[in-house]
Length: 107
Length: 120
Image (cartoon, rainbow over all chains, first blue to last red; front, top):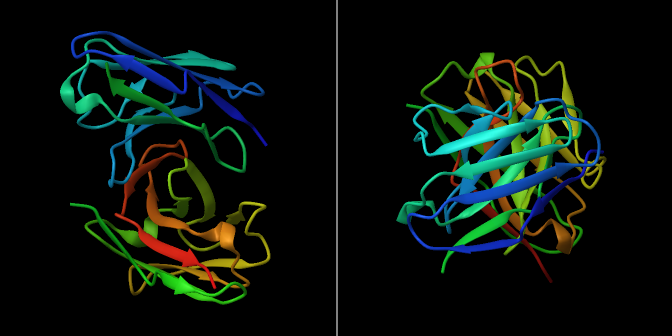
């Protein structure tokens, strides 16, 4: 099973600042990683797939990078609606696994 | 517009059973792999099970293997999760999710979830 470790657990930032979230895999997963955003009381929303491709309708301030075992989600300038929990997910092998999440909170 | 609506959640005693359903609309259900993902209260996401479009391929998380059964009825545009021998640790919101249209196995659309509580 591929374990995904996200860091930091919590990121405290102000609107307009840049957010950098990390996801590290326990083994190489090529570029087969996605990022999701989840707001309280809502289902997750797919943001990025295959490490760097934005899903339909996702704003350009969200970008993803990385391959192998180290991946990054960057939000270039935080908007008020971006404060949420972010999860990574790998699809390189079964079982599908998610990271533990990073909460982006308002400082 | 893709729409997924889960139902069937509720309170059940340890050792009991429950059957979740997911009604799909807005896309050709029979051509997409479908999934169940759960989230315990205040916790992260946990993949539970996946089923291919024709039910040829089925996968389970180790935590539910032998207790849960995923199935689908393409004529009814519906996905199911039969949950037996339920444990307290199965308490969670259960989401139905559709695979992306691309070749990668990601979850593009999600329902709003149904809460399962296992408690005596």
